[in-house]
View 1 (spheres, rainbow, N blue to C red):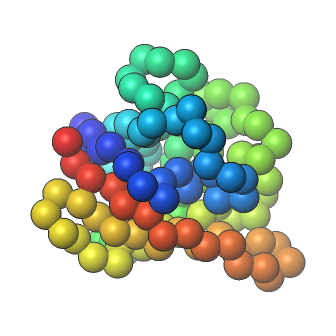
View 2: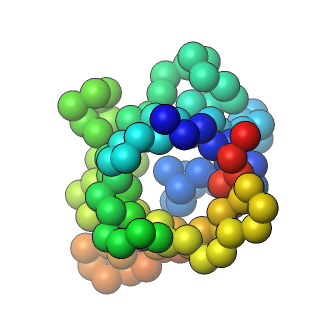
Length: 119
């Protein structure tokens, strides 16, 4: 497993809502086709289980795994709108800069830029 800390413009799960100031960081533990996201530290609170569908070596579609946890209305909506496409834009040191884009069923695009850094 690989472990990442997301530190700025971070949670692609929060695309449609403002950032929660009580969240200091996200910890992401990734296997090949899935990842678990923890808020403020591993084993703190309830993790988010995510499915990664790789489109190429640098791009994947993220959806939430409803078989492992009950999904909020926001996460159900993201899944119903074909998830979030995350693309690597560049690597600097231990950090990957990415673009996250969700295209809703009615054609609207929601986008975000972010950074994921390896610990």
